[in-house]
Length: 138
Image (cartoon, rainbow, N blue to C red):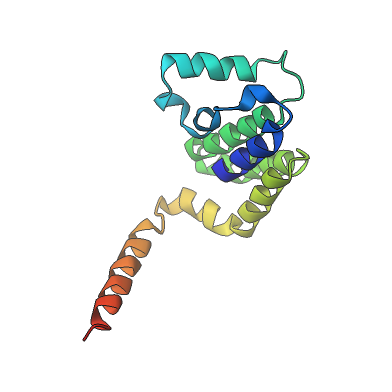
């Protein structure tokens, strides 16, 4: 979703100068923003700035992040509604992200039951690939 928000911002920045130098406001977690960054982001999210596509993409991103805090029984319904909202947003990068999420639907919902990610497997794979690269020297 960060890539999608950034793509929307880049496209929109050409027409909306207030988006210049705001990249990390949109990409950083809200909890990591400084007070001045929170104020600046609040101004950009203000409803009076009608038609700011980046703000819509950001709200969709925040809604996706909220998925991970839901109980297992609500996850599938929430994700379905989120995918519909993202798909109807009219923002191509967000629509593409929603399509990707639909492709990985089963894996995402499986996380809610197991709470296991593929990070450990990816780490082991990285070590194996590094060992193979070193072995080529011999």
